Image (cartoon, rainbow, N blue to C red):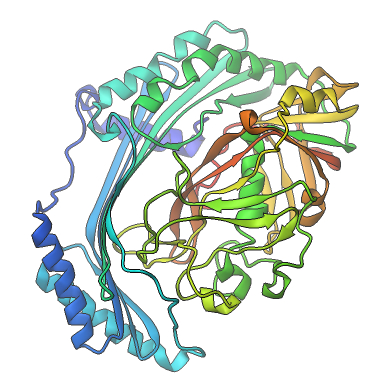
Amino acid sequence: MPVTRRRFIGGSAIAAATSGAACQKPAPALPVPRRTAATVEDVLAQALDSAKKAGATYADARIVRRRTERVATREDHVVSVTSAETYGIGVRVIADGAWGFASSPTVTGGAAEEAARKAVAIARAARPALKHPVELAPAPVAKGKWQTKMDIDPFEVPLADKAAYLLSLWPLVRDVALVKFASGAIESLGEHKIFASSEGSLVEQTQTRIWPSFSVTAVEGGQFESRASEVPPMQAGWEYVTSSSIAKDARRIAEDAVKKLKSPSVTPGKRDLILAPSNLWLTIHESVGHPTELDRILGFEANFAGTSFVKTDQLAKLKYAADLVTLYADKTAPGGLASCGWDDEGVATQRWDLVKDGVLVGLQTTRDLARWIGETSSRGTSYAQDHASVAFQRMPNVSLASSTKDTALADIIAATDNGVLVTGNGSWSIDQQRYNFQFSGQMFHEVKSGKITRALRDVAYQSSTLEFWNACDMIGGEKSWELHGTLWDGKGEPGQSNAVSHGCPPARFRQVDILNVNTRGKSTSGGVRPGKDDC
C-alpha cells in the first residue's frame, strides 16, 4: 500500500527515534501478569459473584490480551515499526433490565469486583432512559477452547526477518521503467480471550491474523498510478506470508502500474461489469454486510456510517438480488478473519443464509437482538475489540456462494460482448443507508466480443444495492472462489475495529453505470486501506 505524506512523515519520525538495531529483535511486550488457569477462573468468578451480589440478573466477564504490530518499508529502507498491546478485564451486566459495562487494565480479584459493581451502577443509571428492558435469547452453556490453525506465530518472528522480507521486494521492481516508489507492510493482529458468564459458560480462544501488502507507483509527466498486491489478510501464521504470491507477482504489479499510466481514460456509459473476487468482496461488505446488521436496521447503530435501508418486515419478501444469488454469513469459515468457536456472548458460531435465491431471508443478531425479529436464538455475532470495549453486534464473514456450474473468469469474459473487468479494490463511497454507492478498483480492462482488448484507467462503477444485485447474471464456480477481507472494519462510538472476511467468485452484472473519474493526474485507484476506520 502506498505511504501517504502524513504516514511517511510520522513513520520517518518513528524510525529516526529508534536505532538500526531496533529491527534485530521483537520489541519487548508490555508486562502481562502470568496466571494459572485456576487463577484466571477465580478472577472471572469473582467478577460474576460481585455482579450478582450488586443486583445483576445476568453477567459476563472477558479477560482479553490484544496485540498489534506493523512493519512498514519504502523502497530500500524501513520507515516504521509500531506495536501495541492491551490487557485487562471487561465486565458486562444486566441490572434493572438495562445493560451496564465497566473494565479494568488490572486483572486481579479486587479489580474485577470493582468493575462489576461499576457495571451494575451504570446499568441502573441507564434504566430511566430505557424504553424496552433487555431480553436475552437462551443459549446453551459453552465450554471449550479454540485457536487459529497455524504453524508459526507471527509475533514470535523477529522484526528483522519481517523487514528483510519486505526489503527484498524493491530489487524485483526498481528497474521497471517509470517506477519511482514502492511500499510494503506486514501487519499482525493477535487476540487471546477467556470468557465466562453467570449462566456457566467458560471458553478460551486465541485468534491470530496477518496481512502482507506491497504497492508500486509509476510516475510520468506529472501523473502517477499505483498498483497494490491482492494478497488478502487472513487468519493464519507467518507461513502465510512466506508462501504468498507477493514476491512472484511483484514485477507484474510494477508493470501494471506502468500500464495504467499509459492506458486510455474510460468512456463513461452503461456496460456489463465483470468483478474479480479481489474487487467484489468490498462491494459485498458495504452493500450486503452492513445493511443486514440488525442494530443498524433498528436504528440502534447510526453514528458510525449510518443505518440501513432494510426493514425487518421485509424478511422472506424483499427481492434483494437475482435468483442465482445466494449470500451467506459464516463465522466458521477456515481462515476467515471473523471466524472463531464462540462469539463474545459464548454463543457457538455458525453459518446461515442472508439472501437465498435472491430473497432476503436472514439478518445478523446477538442474544439481545434476536427477539426483535421473532427468533429464539442468537446468530452468534457479538464481538468486542478489547477488554475495555463493550461487546455488540459485529459483522461475521459474509460471502457470495459460487455457482454449481464449473464457470471460470475466462468463461464470463468469453460470454461478454461489451464490458469492463475490474480487479483489486480502490476508492469507494456509499450513502448513510447503504444503498447508493460508487466503487473503483486497481486494474481495469475493456472486454469486447468475449476478449480483453486493452487496459483502461479512471474507472468507477455506480449503482444502488438492489439494482446492482438484481443485475447479476453470471457467477463463477467453486474453483474460482476466493477469500478476501479487511483487518479494520470500523463501527460504533466509541469506535471499535473488527476483522472480517468476504469470499466470492468472479461475477457479472448487466448494464451498470461506468464513470470516468479523471482527477487531472491524481490517481483514485491505488493504495486504499479498505476498512481502516471507515469501512
